Length: 490
Image (cartoon, rainbow, N blue to C red):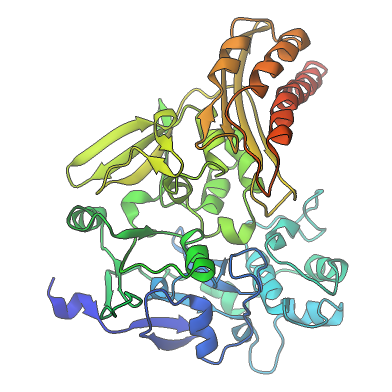
């Protein structure tokens, strides 16, 4: 393709139905771009995706149509929105008529200072338009089927949450005249090849942003430029940019590459594309991999899960990422791709040091493979200062198979207790082949407490982490005993 069709000085973004040009530096986030356009409803609160004051709606592909998805504008590079369609809080209302979400927030007193309100409204609108929103209630859903966890990434510091919850639970269903509801059945904007090439300054602040058309093109770029930075949801990189002032001379967006997307079931494994977001995985698996079903609702917030990808969480090599402990317990493999071909690496062999992995220059994670059949007894335990929207102090994934009262196989993944995520191999050996009993668990709990090399930091002390490991296995046993007792009584 000629330079004239790939190298462009600006991006085109649909904002509230109007085409806008973006020609800023590649590190500029969507929030700053929108505010520069005079759309100041979205605010910067924390600049790291924890408060939701910056939330906007993005039209994401969903089958043959689109899904209105709430994302953190403070983390997403504006260049990543080239050719995309977004709605801000200002764009929800039609003419002089409030949007139903805005109306309910107003009449039920869901806003005081108003700083957080536009973000709440965008997250609430995403749930309002969720096509599979149920019509009944359960502990996490209102009488209108509204999932209150859709607001888990939005913080309010003055009103309190009761009137906001009241507004959410008072919403009806979109009418046939609702333009945003009708838009859900129209085709999604295509993610075209993009090359936003900004002249480098001496400090390297402008750089280059590219969206390759397919995986082959991405791998060719990686082979030629191993130092290029891969971005998908940018939920990690966006924080580095905002908080630490990080800059990259070359960014490569891989979040919409079809070869890195989707979930595929075979007779031997479940394969998850590395660029699939955590919300998409949660929705599409729908509990078919129970351990991931237990993990994903505890991973950060809905706003973060709407952007974060499973490959990105593994690619950072962080010892406190939430997916590695569960995937280690599931004995997952990673498919690594480069211009030279593909190779499969066991996740247990992937991490080599603090934020270091076996991934070579020029390689990226193409997919995650989880072998079948799955262990029948699973659990994910996340110990953090908050139940939701927080980083783990300790995370433990369990996958155990008990046959005739004896532990036939045990796999335990740990996070937050060493420089890397790791398998608790000594504990696995301590319970395999032994009766699934309280006596076995008590003895193995001391073994589990000795796994890893816990350290003191601002999240937890070494002693606390050790104590959490010791009690974790007993908690898992109690959970599973209760489940087995319930099943036996049916």
